[in-house]
Length: 227
Image 1 (cartoon, rainbow, N blue to C red):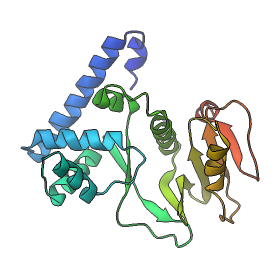
Image 2: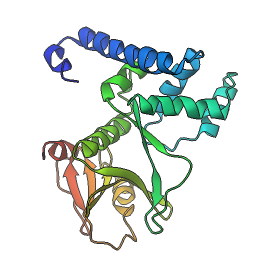
Image 3: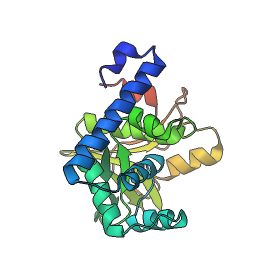
Image 4: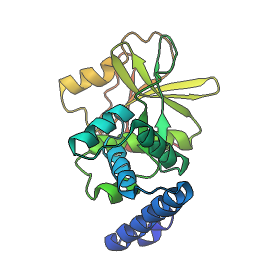
């Protein structure tokens, strides 16, 4: 959000500004427009989506979560509220699709927040979820570059992002650091069995180039500065 660049040295002013934006989106763009009565449920759904960035989401799962908290709600209401947040551009729904069959799953989409600052406002302190933060940042950047983005399912493995624009196609895996052999094998191994020649990337904060087997490793900051 451009105004934040003018006050970035003032943390309290930034937090206040983001909280005002969040309240405006929730209270005006969603609650007023759709005449929502259960505002507390809406806020809880938004908080739930914010804390589950990059994870498959189902209305049934959310309903069970709320039931365990003794806060029952119908699946239809949950689906409606999620739809409202996407219509207000607070979240973006990302479909999951099989890479071999090319069909989309009809359940368990993933959701990414439009602006990380808003996630910080909703969750107060989410710095421990650095992998989610970086994944969300990369997702937003891919949208900014004009790609249509989906989550790719490669047998039992998952590709964070499949980015397509016209005839161009790229695959991206995002992680904080490739700090162990197990992490390296997981991130690079996600591409096993994908036989096409489209570029495949692993993005992390590591500064050393760890490319292997034709898969490109790139520093996330360098990726963001490309365009």
